[in-house]
Length: 112
Image (cartoon, rainbow, N blue to C red):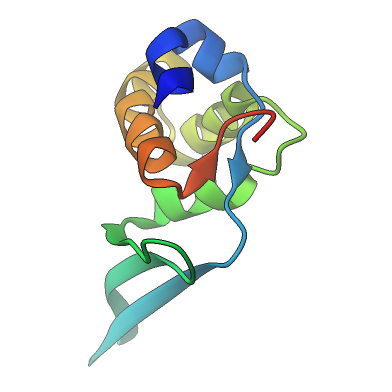
């Protein structure tokens, strides 16, 4: 929480964030005439507070891209390209989500 409080949005985008060890993604799929479609996807911690959050595919992909080696801005740029949206627009939407994921321990800031 202290790291989040002292880290502005620009610094957050430049940080090398790491997905917490032991994360589990689960999906509930529904069968319809076109085949299987995802009805819900969740990320769950397998240790500690064992938080569980519903996420969409872009956020699940962003979490998976947080490898601790590349800055968050790189993952945001790839996400923006995949969505056909502007990087600034995606960054504005992603920053509060990333802050929440760090606060809950799904993502780890540098040096932790």
